[in-house]
Amino acid sequence: MPTVQSAPMSEDAKTLIDKAVRTFLDEVPALAPLTLVVGVDLHGRGDTQQFRLEMPDIEVRKDIAADARVRIEMRREFFNAMVEHGARVADWREAFVHGHAKATGVEQYMRLIVNVVERQEERSRTRKARH
Image (cartoon, rainbow, N blue to C red; front, side, top):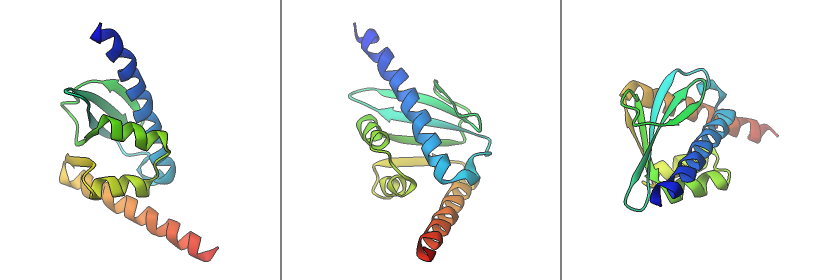
């Protein structure tokens, strides 16, 4: 019976990963054209679900993502809560800073993503200050 329960959970995870990526890219559109394979590891009670996120088309599937340039790891419950509560870029940044989420990978990709996100946040702050 455990396989019957895990199948809907992984479909749900795929949907949540897709939603999280689309929300993130709505806020940071400069990353949308980036061609990148991301491995997403969601740790649950005694197991880890692994997903492959392929960009820019945003294709998510259950896979080990051996060719991933960036790998993101976090607790499944934490990820679910973040996405269900409509996490914004600032929320994700805080999760990485406080160790609730971890990203590893090719240094050039990691730096590029951080720089683009920081520039977008700066533009957003500037826009808010003008209004």
